[in-house]
Amino acid sequence: MIPRLCYWTDGERGRAGRDQVDVIERLARGGVELVVLRERDWSAKQWSDCAERLTKLRAQGLRVLASRRLDLARALELDGVQLGAESVGVAEARAFLGPRACIGYSAHDPAEARRAADAGASYVTLSPIFATASKPGAEARGCAWLAAARAQLSTPVLALGGMTPARVAEVRAAGAWGVVAISALGAAPDPEAAAREFRRALADEERT
Image 1 (tube, rainbow, N blue to C red):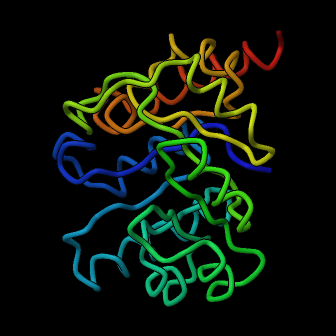
Image 2 (cartoon, rainbow, N blue to C red):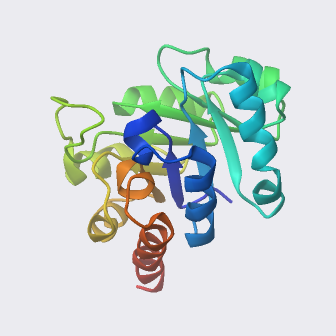
């Protein structure tokens, strides 16, 4: 089952200067199911230490992916990778990591999303749906665009960009399977409470 609530790390901005693993632990307690580590400046030791500290949470069901780093995903026995246009292809990643790996793909138009889905991506993210500080100046695509793109795909779609609990109903109505948040989760004053708020919004949609 593809997770519905996901968190992507983004260095200091995404966690308000706090310890990354501590933030992830609090988010997991609140209901985050998948984490993509995008720490481009980490040393090999920092990656290894993070993976070791997350062992217990992963045993409890949290999935942890490396952004674009197939080598780290395999060496640290993570759950998979998040790919994009500038990374290796989905088929190559699948061959490298194996059939059980979770392989996400970050797409910005329907054609790109279809190619990733056809190549075997576990899910695709579509973004930016709303304006977001992580992509200043990028055009917000909106939920009508999301719905049109989703209609062309059978692979689960996660909505990314400006996600808040209040927007969950709108993106779910547009066909998103779930949502990805960065600052709204990791930089929240209380990450666990923020995750629980997202979970409540998702649960409300599942009941309707």
